[in-house]
Image (cartoon, rainbow, N blue to C red; front, side, top):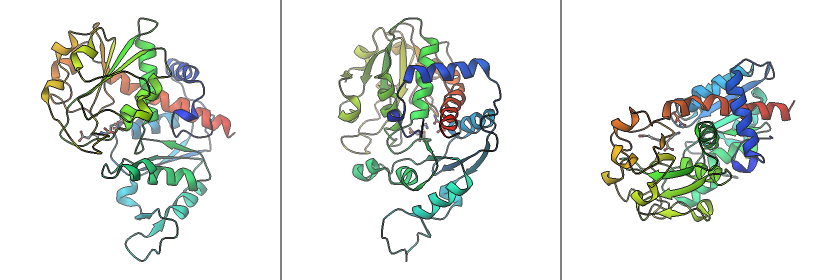
Length: 315
Ligand SMILES: NCCC[C@H](NC(=O)CCC(=O)O)C(=O)O
Ligand SMILES: NC(=O)OP(=O)(O)O
């Protein structure tokens, strides 16, 4: 693996999932990354991604440097040919070039602004680093995708499924803030490559991009979609069609025990952080069907598998 931007960098998802599950089983330190440095830049908050990726790198013997780039770094200019006489002190060309002097792998988190669809799809910050860095770049959640989360989710479903082809339902749930489509986009892309029966359910106006959905069925009736589900993946996202807008905060979409009763005793997943009693009810998160903590635990081994492959490729 040369880099980890998204699903296009994975040509054997099942094998990568198996490798991550094997690393989890072994849970031991390796020396492959000795003398190598991972640099992580965060333009947005993080708990899981930051700590699980650091842990993964350390399990591989790597050194880790982390920077809250939005607060501690110079304001970056991304436009080619810009006359930098305003408030941006450093161009992405120098920033990415210099970081590549210090790091063997660079990882970046940069959320979308959710105001301008074209701008977000150009993914200026994250793709700026992939363009100008001379070392491999890893996606820690960009404007359009969260592939380390989706790999974790593929691992979690693989290890917890009791049948060959489980039904996985991705359901939208309400949220007071406008959130990215990154997590659902990547989940859908990864599930489409797995042997699962994937169904998406969301209110009208919340359909994900057609390029992501492809032929995956979308129900605007949540109860119908949940019927016989083996896994329910709960997530809010803002509208793609009415870009970045909150069209509904309808509490009828919150996942509670009544909704869970429609399923095949489904396991409940969420990438976290989760707003209790808005997205998912306490009774579900505190109940036996919730696997959100184990899911978050798998983040370490998904990151370890990806970093390991990149180190092996660049040995
Ligand atoms: N990385 C996991 C999710 C990150 C982000 N959630 C958030 O920003 C939630 C913040 C809040 O609840 O206010 C998202 O949905 O993409
Ligand atoms: N799921 C996830 O990416 O969590 P953080 O935003 O806390 O990293």
